[in-house]
Structure formats: structure tokens, C-alpha cells
Image: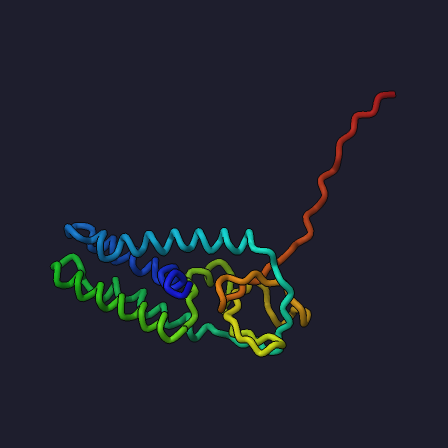
Length: 179
């Protein structure tokens, strides 16, 4: 699951490089295919979180993991800095550089969160449960306002996604009475 989440996290950078190298004959091989796979895995992750039953987790410690997400932003600058439209060699160099960045993130177990989630109001946290297990937690609300037990959906073995169950307003029933 770490490789899939890594592709999700770096899909925008790969898509930008694919766009920049679109006039080269093998642009799709280096960047577009992994970007597309990242998008497919992102859709799959959303489906898993929506279909997975939430579980109650008791958190003893929650800390911000934004510093790890910030590491992805540096790779998003790669398409701006490297001009892949100049030559095939530039495409190869950019592809190897991005592959190394993704591999290092996956091998070191850095958080695999697409930084674009921050644009939608989500945040990444390191959260330790009462059993001593540490997870990456993706949450839309502020964990400081949570009760000790909070509902989350697991995404793989190391990521939890906050599950907010909001009360749905009941629809008024219209009855036609005959008098």
C-alpha cells in the first residue's frame, strides 16, 4: 500500500512533467503512466475509505505531520526547474530524479499524502493510540476538539482517515389527507 500511496502523493508532479514533455515521443512512458496510476489509486483510496466501516480509536497523542507533507512540495517544483522539452536526456534525468524522490519517501515511511488535500481542508497528523500504535491520521476537523474516542477508517496498515458522521436532516414526508 505504501507504493500506491506514494504514487498518489506524487501524481500531480508527474502529471506536470508529462505535460511539459508532451512533445517528446516517450513522455507518456516516464510520467503520464505513473500519474494516471496515481489517479486510479487515489480514486480507489476514496472508495476504500467510503466503504470501510469506521472503527473507534482512542488517541493518546496527536501531533502535526505537515513537515512531512512539505517534502512533497519540493518535488512539485521539479517540473518548473527542469526543462524536459529540450531533450530526451532531460526527460530521463527528470524521470530518474522523481523516481528517486518517490522511492526515498516510500523506503523511509514518510507520510504518503497528496499535498493537494490541504487545499480541501484536510490535514495530516501523527497519532498514537492507547495501544501504542502510531498512525498517520488524515483529518478534516481539528483533533484538539475531539472526544478521546474518535471514529476513523483505516487505509492500509499505517493510515487512518477521520470519519465524520454528520446527522442528516430528515426529509419531511408529504402526506395528502383527504377530508
